[in-house]
Image (cartoon, rainbow, N blue to C red; front, side):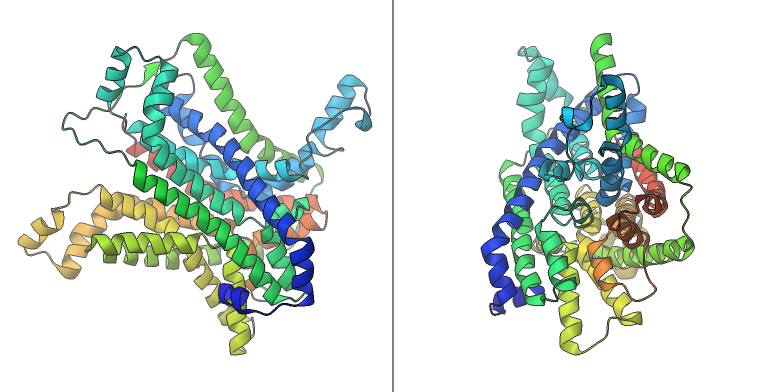
Length: 503
């Protein structure tokens, strides 16, 4: 609905102004943010995944699950924490002035309130997407392939650049594409940092300027960018897919690094974890304790957040499960299901929320009570079903192709086959899918901000309201509760990934 309005809507004064003055800066800022974020993300994720999957070094077992913890932290919470850490009055610059005796005007310091700063914000919570996909590919490399490369004189760096990376690149790009689509959908961090992206323009055009047609036009541009990322990744994966069919498949054993290299590797993994999780969480905890932050309505906020998270994750999981089982009978239907789910996932939450608002406006319904919650759950289903389909489909793809025929030959069909065969076999993927869906819905901001009914403020909405009003101390407790609520599912997901990884 939002995209149709964006195409069919007539011109207006606000749109003419944006077209002449703001559309190009909005688009360039968004694209530049994604480019910088992608480069930084690959620099974090791929080397970490390679050393964890292929080498033994001090702390490897800890980092194998700890580096997934940033997934529990939303990008806007990361922005709040690092803005306070890096501000002129923050501890980093204060210590620098104490050590050097300089004033704030006498030195250069990175500015988070610019495009490179915004680009660095989603890297921390989103690089686990690329790390997980990279680790999965590196862990499944054939020992025979690596041994053959070593026999031909390949050094460790050659093994990575010339053997492992080309094989794993499709999966790496798939994880990167997923992370960049999430970064393109960001609203909270960009709005807090005051950087004008397409996502910020969409929400402001509707809420501040009451210009739905202009918001729809901007939504169309954002969907085109996200869709282009999706299509490019799918095309590359289709052309570059590599399969191993040998019956002499061997999982490579992890090699031991020399002591100096092992210590450097441990230090680098520690630095990644420090930047992406420990430092921002520690700063929020310290700020909450120092300011003695209090909030009188934390329980209603937490209750609304968990209620929407459980309802949204449950509905999206059921949709993902139905899609997966329906696609099980046909290869064409399977590909079509994944393509549709991924295409909808490419639509940012602000765009889907805008579409829901258009439907409510055209039908004359008020944004209140059960209607608002129903539309919000519908947006969650539309937005995140793909995140549930992928783990389920990946589990299904690993099953023997003739398993269904064997079950049917034994008289197992319909509901009986579902309960006794499909459900147990899909349990690992279903577990991962449910956790991912809950965490993603828990962190969602723009659609919840646009569609929530009166009295249903969530932790994300309240934290963003406090932060944009420059009341960061009050935003710390809701922000920490968001991370805390998502931390247990992420820990369970980390444990599950570690349990299923071949050792």
